[in-house]
Amino acid sequence: MRFTDFPTIVESIKGGRLKATFMIAPLAMKLREQGVPVKILYLGHRDGSTVMVRKDLPAKDLRDLRGRTFAIPSKYSNQNLVIHKLMEDQGLKSDEIRFVEMPPPDMPGALASKAIDAYFIGEPHAAKAELDGSGRVLYHAKDIWPGFISCVLVATEDLIKERPELMYDLVRGIAESGEWAETHRIDAARVASPYFRQDEKVVRYVLTQPPDRVSYRMLTPTDQEMQRIHDMAIKAGILERPIDMKDLLDRRFIPKVIKAAKID
Amino acid sequence: MHRSPIIRIIYGVILALIVLGTLRYKPWQRNDREQGGSSRARDQLSVGFLPVT
Image 1 (cartoon, rainbow over the protein chains, first blue to last red):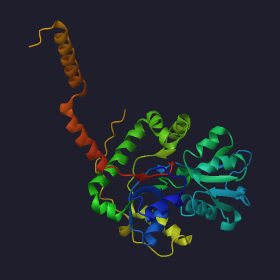
Image 2: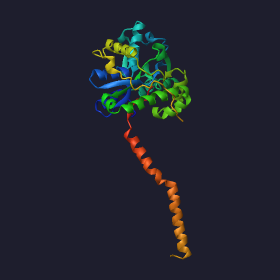
Image 3: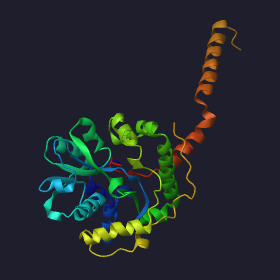
Image 4: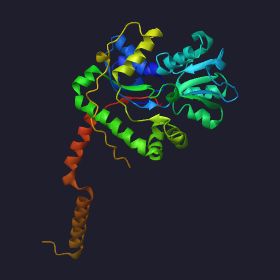
């Protein structure tokens, strides 16, 4: 089921219409904090997020974006947490850049029309601005946080309890298709572009320029990295109370050996 | 029995159509297909995603 924004995904999960989904990691933690019985089973990918700025701006780092408008997918996104950490590292206060939440597909158009000055989002919505000439890359997520985590696979506890065999199949499918995509990037662009509803050349660009722009390996979420996101979310006031990682993570469906899927 | 050549030709054509239809639609595989299809339908799971990496 394709969505265009995260609040609708949350409502679908809470309403019981959706029992498994990809969603941004801190949002999954927020759901858990709110008492929604969900678990993180796996990652969707690593890296693959990019900070884009308007091409006509001479910005070299975040200090040059003081007073500018910066779009993020959600305050519950790791993009939000990481950009605030980077601001802190560069000596900026959080109110020196104006942040707005925006559905990812709207960001390239907003940048082109100069409604926003920069944004941080998962691909292909960054590459799109790069290819249409309205934006340029300020940072790749992998350069700020190697192995950056954006979206995680979440399932409800009742689905996990009722259909564990389906969870094994789902997680194995993600792992094996990711392994295939790593070695068949051009073919992966062809297969994936209809799901993204994007021109194949945009997806091909994402998967090849540079080749490590997004990774589909090492998708097991560790306690340490999820704890790091959690601690940043607490510090940012996104989470109100601590969550135990053992309540949040369920890694038993991850295959020990990952072979590339056979995809034509 | 029908000895008329026309009736025998009609019977022959009908028989040929039955044989060709049987070979075309393979009814002996139908139960397997239907069982597989319903089994797959039962295992279908909707997984939400936003088209971002």
